[in-house]
Amino acid sequence: MRRVIDHVGPCTLKCERDRFWMLVRSIISQQISTAAARTVRNRVVALVESASGSKRVTPASLLALGIDQLRSAGCSQRKAEYMLDLADKVESGEILLSTIGRLANEEIIESLIEVRGIGRWTAEMFLMFSLGRLDVFPVDDLGVRNGILKLYGLENTTSHAEFRAIAEPWSPYASIGSWYCWRSLESNSPTASLS
Image 1 (cartoon, one colour):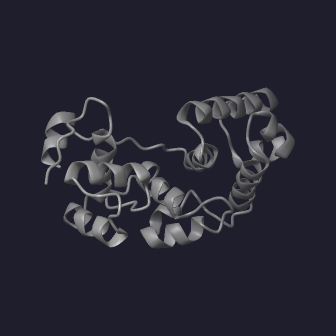
Image 2: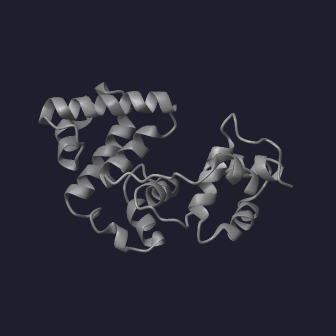
């Protein structure tokens, strides 16, 4: 890890303060390329702006669009349903994004996975990139896992328990350790293993 930190420099992990938009973006990004996700996000923002005059995507503005308009922006039927389920739960007060940061990590995860289309990984990304929680280790994140495999010279058969054991010393800064794993996968990062 020291080699990556020395090469990459200080951690520049940034938070998305708009909690609702962070979750919408996460749903849009599921199982599609970064470029495709960006295109869909921009189309959704354009639809909201056209309908409301504001570029800010809110639960109310998303609910006003409905499934057909979200699909016209490039969202699948399922993703449109997920986004509207999130909007409905936030709008109704079932999920209180304004105060969710007062809860412990596991309580937040339990609350968010009640939304269709939001699983543990999405909730962990929310903890890291919206709430700025520093001690989150997303063991199911492919980039983090690939980073660890590369850095520690491990086989693709590494278990969850082994990944967790490697990340244990990173606590209470597991989010930062995970961020460096992602950076290690960039083309100009060191490729030699640390084992």
